[in-house]
Image (cartoon, rainbow, N blue to C red):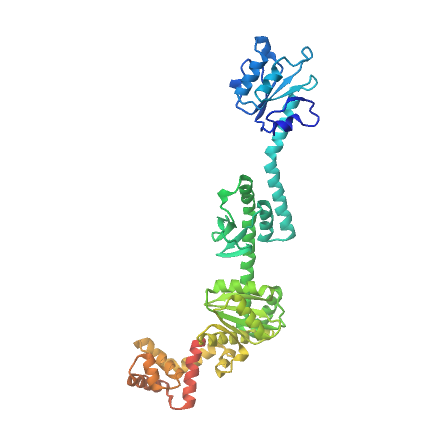
Amino acid sequence: MRVRDLVHTPGLAVDLRIAAGLDRTIRWVQTIEVQDPGPFLRGGEVVLTAGAWRAAGIAPADFVRRLAEADAAAVGYGLLPDCPEVPDGLVAAAERHRLACFVVPVAVPFIEITEVFIAAKRAEWERPLRRHLAQHDRIVAALRTRRGVDAVLGVLAQELGLPVAVRSQSVVTAGEALADAHAVPLIGEGLADAELLLPRRLEELDVEQRTAVTQAMPFIALEVERLRAVRATELRYATELIDWAYAGASYTPSASARLTSLGLPPEGPLAGVVVRGGEPAEVSARFNGVLGADGVAVPRGGEVAAVCRVRGEVRLQAESWYAALGGGLCFGVGRLGSVADLRASLMQAAYAADAVATRSTAGWMTHDQLNSPVSLFTAQDPALVTATCQALLGPVLDHDARHGSELVSSLAAFLESGGRWQETAQDLHVHINTLRHRMHRVEEMTGLRLARTVDRVDLYLAVRALDLF
């Protein structure tokens, strides 16, 4: 509160005589009647007096001088019924020392002036608390309207007058990206990787701004925790859905119910998607962000498997998804269908991702771009395919395991080269006679002949199936 505010308070009938230093901040309002007020002042006080010190022979000019020397903010002289006049020299001394001076009528008690000051100080002290309570109410109201971290960040940004954001697992997940971000760690269960981002260092903010940040952070942490819990549940549900889809027809009713709970139509059109490359957890998180309500993606082993609703032409959709993920991945899409077709679609997607991986550059491929009979493996039971391949190549695999030989890998290289002996030997960095000896051993163990087309196809499919499953 300033001197000006006190003397001009509506309803407070004081008479301002010297309008000097009215913009000074009042430290306190104090009644003093001692001869030397200096030891009782700290500077900035409004001193109220009724002139009792005059009985000790103190001149008004001396009293005002001592107030000025003690750095008082103002002097208020109170009139008494038996002394209704201001003593000579007091006002003149106040003017000489540039000290605000006002006269308090008999009808105005000093306590009324003190109460005005205390009321103003109380309002000043309560202002931050009221502001913080109002901020709390705005955050609660925002969360009632729209749950999420963005709701809290919106209130905090208005309070600070600055942009803010939240970074989780090294990715900005709420708010706007800041060119020069200063992180404040969020405190909460499992939030070691979550931070509030500010455009300035926390210690550079003023007290009220820092308090606003401190008050908002528990709400932000709770929302981050809540969203992570929701996502963890959704991820568990989505993982079960993918597992049921791979399990086949016996789990179709369960998969249908789970699709419905996730907001996806069991009748389709649905497609299986397999993505290889990158960190599976990170890729699945990005893919879920791209899909929104149109699908679910989960890490599965070293890849990402997804069930997606396709809107429009499948190739255009695949291209759009791939571009949104940022490229650099092996992205395969299976055929469209209903929940009953998901197993085959996911297997086709895996084979499409494999086909992309054999190319020199990453990219995407849909099932209808594949025309190799090897894709028939994707429609078979993995255990059956593996058992068939083991029956054919079992002796060769056992020999490699016992002796540390490389018969199967040499066979795969030979078949991949189209049966070119010299080229395969060079690729394997062995003599051509060594390669011929290895292939002869394979023929002995399997009873097949590489010179026969049908036998070579069987061996190729067996080797290829081992890679698939």
